[in-house]
Length: 357
Image (cartoon, rainbow, N blue to C red; front, side, top):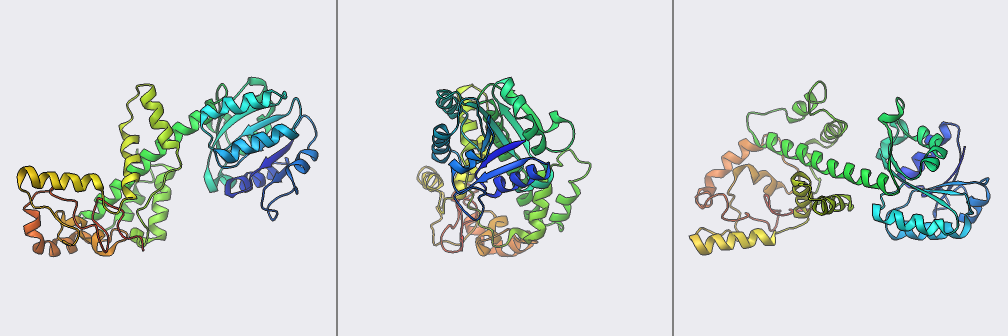
């Protein structure tokens, strides 16, 4: 089957290769001429036999909107466009309506698999009319993992349903990553645990918490012991926010997603304004000691290695912290919520992003 593929970044390039391995003819187009099979969008379309199928794999938002508009100008009645990026589901109806003005069909498809999809296959969630889904099924079958179709592909519903399902999938991802991260920090903080990575690795077979994300967590810890040098600054690409908003709009409680998304926001703050306010208020109503930025004392001794190193939590940190905590008794007496600790210079214990140098 022929396919035009627009966007040959990390995922798009691997998808082109996987499709070719399955025997499909792929004409790829990218702004980078070193990656592109065609010199222009028009040339890509010209090389495809009608009725054409074109897969869009570009960043969501303006890049997708502009690509859809450009395709509207060069495709014909009966052609099919599949948006495989992470577009907001509400934009799918807008894009579909715009293309339908010229008789061009539209399918949205959420794609999961990242850089590993070339060999492992991609989880696919599609939205659109039955006829359009069936028409593109040879492409879906080539991209999904080997095995039963329903374990790697779903026709999730009407236009927009594919991206909606992928959005919720990404929300789950936020919560899982946060849970593993919290477990890692706690294991590192406890002095009786001497093999944190080994403990994580033991979970990868036969336990109820095993998952591919857990496998990747072990891989990361083995490649970068103690995550030394890794900044805690964590971005988000938008799908977690969209999922949380949908939870609010549909009165569905989503406390795990909310906590994990807000933890990312906190990671970007060198000194949390809201925790500054809490510390100041405790000083006002209770006379509790308020730690200032230049104060190096810790309330929680387990946080000291993060403060000292400004990078990953170090193995054996609890012993080091206990030895160091003797000099922190005056601060500890103020109670666990009297301040956020030092967040200047080498980085703070819990409330900010710490040093990213």
